[in-house]
Length: 371
Image (cartoon, rainbow, N blue to C red; front, side, top):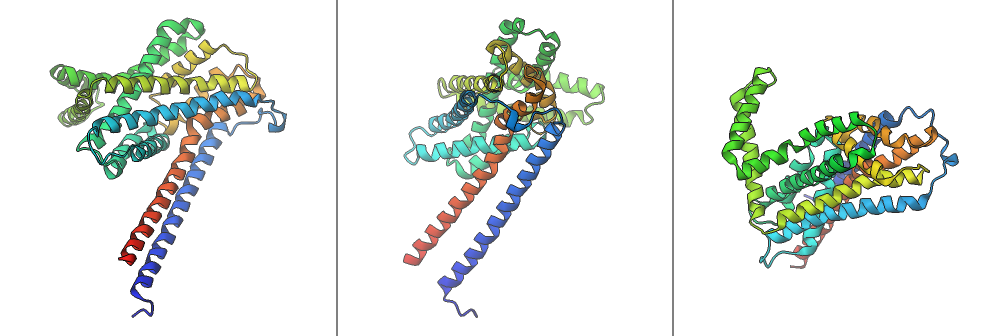
């Protein structure tokens, strides 16, 4: 028997649990630090020609618009998820807009985090679905629907920008090979959005298209179990189509999510221009923007976390406008905005969630003691 009173004993057990969990979080953060360090070493390890940081002249004020682009883009993405949560919960008295914004913010940040640490960005959406099921307080089915629509609208938003760039802006850059590769990458990028749209409005035609595609892959010996793959693909596409139909019931909502996604992708694609000019690069906005969109499309099908390796190699086309000693530092700043920031924000968000749980448990224990 313990000499401590029951309430004190419970408190001691809770303290032990709280002590163990921070240790797990610290380990988690350390793992992320190792991931960042390893990725940075592989991407920027060959920095012999980089100028000394003390010698680098940076127009710091030009990094302000780059930072604003990132912040506003993130706000648009969070706003997109908040809007969907608000619309599907319309009329519910228990809906809390502040809670919705918090859940949307965490869903976006942790989704981006998992996208950037898993090959081919396959980890973000499943986690978003899991997190919204646990915390979203949404009507049945929408915890799955919202992340799916978030992904599809994001892809459609980027496709619209890319098509406009390739049609009207490709003449501003002298790199036909890059545009050709970008168009090829865009075909991969557009597969799911087009499939989902076809499954939503032309389900029978989509089913035949899937069968024909899988049969072709089977003949090429890329697919082994043809029937199993057809069944699985049809199921996934139908699930996505069901999600689109649910959102389409709310008039204008899908169009709004696409518009916000266009804004997000446009702002993110502007960041390299401001980084370049901050480091003294003399570039025009349109060629830089079109090249950025083309490269983003070109590296889409590279199955590495955050397109690591391929992104740096291809984006050298953009940053080669700088003197050789400045390229390293400019690309490092750009990767901070496009990649490392999400890996940093992920653990911070997890720690915030952990602290929130501690407060909730302490509040709950206090209530029990008071009663």
